[in-house]
Image 1 (cartoon, one colour):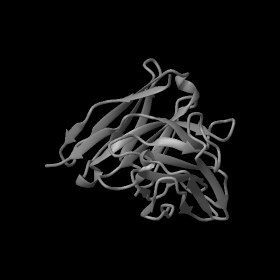
Image 2 (tube, chains in turn red, brown; image 1 turned 60 degrees about the vertical axis):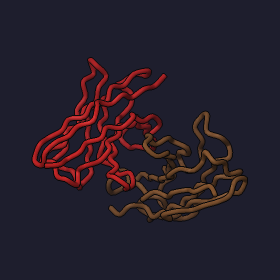
Image 3 (cartoon, rainbow over the protein chains, first blue to last red; image 1 turned 180 degrees about the vertical axis):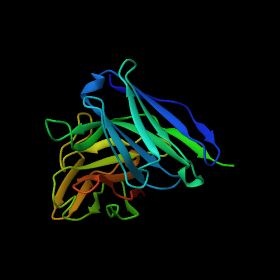
Image 4 (cartoon, rainbow over the protein chains, first blue to last red; image 1 turned 90 degrees about the vertical axis):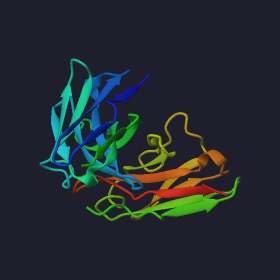
Length: 125
Length: 110
């Protein structure tokens, strides 16, 4: 069965970086993109960006562009999301999600059919 | 890119039907049939309930249905059950930033 297993909770100081992992299993890893979504305490879901292992493309949301990097390790079927220059308002639960696309080339995301369990990142001095 | 607009909360009694709206623009909801809905219980990961406006993934009860008219998409839950109490979020493909989420709607089953 499809599973996305994320790394554990993190506590970071303002200005530091965090790298969250998402290990996929149960499907051909390189055939699907992975999207990252964050949810601040008591807030809604927010798209951060996605990475497509089949062509190495990434696309990031404007509000994290320049601070975020998404990478893949196909040897371990793992996707990483690194967020730098952390601020207190980055405190959130971060989710990875397998992404279905609506075009045959895999450039355009349609929906997210499997999700990781979430990783809480707390930014506090 | 502004978030899609959802009501903050809706409520209904067991057995009733409720509808949650998700309003966007011609750049997202109105321009494409790639609206999806997610259910999220407290402390849990979101779960896909509807994709491409009205399609249900395997395992999702047929009490859940989706539709769209113009720039507003809707999620309808019929025969409300206590376990339906959760947060529901919509999302859409958008030509400007690829993906946009709604702010979420808390469903209370009275």
